[in-house]
Image 1 (cartoon, rainbow, N blue to C red):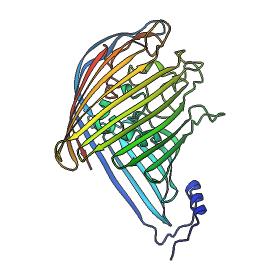
Image 2: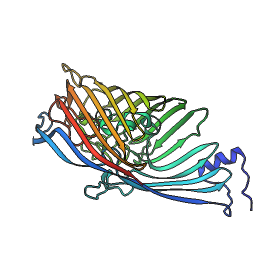
Image 3: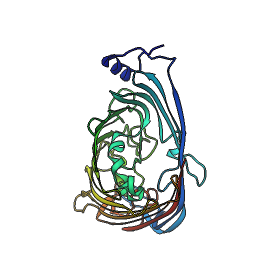
Image 4: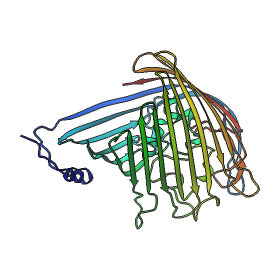
Length: 412
């Protein structure tokens, strides 16, 4: 039995609305089980603890001490997942992906306990018209810019401070529809819309984004824009800190904790890598992130984070590679008569492959902070260090911090 033929128009309609004829007799399906188990030992030179809880008009009193502890998923988040496709004929496929993140230290689920918190989507893929997916998934900014940023080569220790630009996918988007084009002459494009799910409005807590990437020869270059609404219904709205229905907070560090009550977040980002021969990779990246205040925000000035970074990676042998990077983040003044925060960050990363699937790694990050920022209650405070997003949840009590991670990662 032959598959029904499709005109280009018919295939486009099938991609968009999920309908279309296909030969069941010749349909083929496949399902793949995969995962990563990653863990090791981590050291932080200073981690803050609260000795007096803060409030509006009264900053918290914090002290700090060094910390050495087991770490799960420092290089690559530990995960297991299933993905599959079904050939519907005529170049059209159905696809799905379900991916769980977990902590190997205690066996609990990551992403705030979500069963498939890393990915959960289903969709259609057409050779000519691209891929359409619906569910919980990455923003195109992550797909086409984050994939060539510093964290892709050097880990989350090298993420821009606090991952304020989400290039290391600190948050994903729930209830979203995403399109990714085929690659035409090296160019790939992506677009997404995430529904906020708020009664009576399409705009509250929605997300949308656009991205493009060129990959040709030694050059890979991506650019993206992402917008998220997070408007509050009241001053005590419990959605503060969670973007667009994502179960993860985008405010896990002292870098941007003062802007968790923002009405919206806008990100413009670009990143590139350039391959020299078979062993050397050079990279550069830039991002601009804005947190805009709303009626119930705990700050009044739009916060603007500008970060520029450079990196290099050299492969000495088939088994061993070494890389390093630097980034500088500048933030505008949070209030009158104050100076904005500045963050200088340096990173080193070494990897040794024991096999195609098992890898040892050593990661080091150092950050120096200066200037002023806001705490979670809107108080002006001295900026403190928080290396990459590896220090999310364990920011320093001082203006500097060193992070070291030693571990092993196994892919299956």
